[in-house]
Image (cartoon, one colour):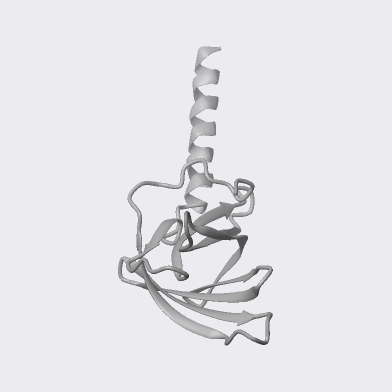
Length: 146
C-alpha cells in the first residue's frame, strides 16, 4: 500500500513539474522603472504573465503609471500582446488613447508611447523611454488589484 502511494506521488510530482515548465516566467514579467523620472511622463510598467497550465497558452496583463503629484497616476490594466519580439498594449483613459510598443534591449526595455489626446486643444505626442527591472518579483500582483 505504501509503495503505491509513493509511486503515485512521484508520478503526480513529475506531471506538475512538466506542466510548470510549459509556463516558465517571461523576461517581461515584473516591475520596470523609467530611468528618468520627470513629471507627466511614464514612470513605470508592471507586467504580469498569465499562463493556462492545461494548454500552455500565455497572455500578459500590463499596468502603466505616469509621474504625477503627489503620487503616480495609473493608466489602469490592459492586455499586452507579445508578437515578433515586440510587446504591444493600448491604454484607453478618459483623456487619451496611449499606444505602447516595448522592445527588449539586453537587460532593459525601450518603450515608445504614442498619445492621441481626445481634446483637439492638445497636441498628440510620441515619447521614447528606457526602463530597468526593479529588484524582486511581482508576487501576489493580479490585474484585479488597482
